[in-house]
Length: 348
Image (cartoon, rainbow, N blue to C red):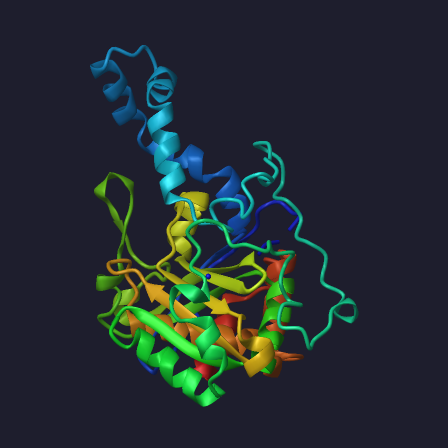
């Protein structure tokens, strides 16, 4: 389961859009999620729980909330460390942490588009964003699943069978084998557009089981309003490159990402393993759907298929690619949620 808009936050007003099915209506809004993640989430959470924190501080004899925070500083740091996701909520290389941004400043600009002429399309790792040689702690390598040396001696068809059998016993797992040429096209696009949003269609009656737990015991429904009549939930995806031989995609509810920012937890994590790509011409994909996070395995598979349709070679010079470009540029006026939903509807 990386990352890259120099503009102040803009909003797109929700409007009625063509139905996903004959009885469906959808409403959605688009925000500059990077701005929300770096400038809004912490203040919003602090304001929300200010009274509770004040009472807690008084009960423990602290004169202020700041004093309470200082008392729990080490515990907070320990919890943050345990919840960190390398490449998304924590730096890939702890010796080189990402730069900090000052409150009130606009979000950081995205990286410049990759000059494809400088990278070799035949190299399975040419799409990596300067990954490290060794994956950081917590990132599973291909050797965690199979014996790589023994597998190298097998034909591609047998490797695919072994890979699927390896994950057959876990109902929450995702697995697939991807032709190298297909992966390379997707990875080149991911370098240019490491962040994007995808809609997840919801039928009438769905959505009640897709609520997300939020601080304070409250639960937040999917991003789409009026889900009881059918609609779509918006999900935020982010690519990371933990090492030279792995790339990871993290899927998170957009509503949660806007609320928690860097502390949001992905509901689905998908990793591509390139260890056998050069020799066998296949990339091995594995992933996991977290139980109780509001997304089923089938829905995660649909999001993964949607990702491949938007990032694949076939999407070049199509409305899908133009949508990705507008999103990466921060063009909130040109990026239309209605158009995104229409393109996703064509996939299903």
